[in-house]
Image (cartoon, rainbow, N blue to C red):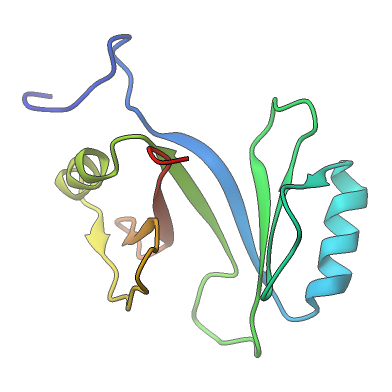
Length: 130
């Protein structure tokens, strides 16, 4: 498409970095997914958030996010798309039909929340500083 940002290989700079699972019983879910996938934690789990990674680095991460109650009508599973060009990729995705999701961001947040054309949420995470 004209004006579309591409990497030198002709592909987008986005990659599936993490599949995020919101959960009520954080400790049980952490133990379950760690054992089920034989993944290891990337850093110590803290404040209801943990990233599990493939020790061989071949597969996407699985991240767990503690939630206090099961809300009806919202995603409990979403993609985190990683990129070194967050601004460019967000603009490209918006041009393809994504929408910005109303989100309150904290200082230092490295993600932007978008909705796909059907309203499913996903995050575009800036990995440029990591």
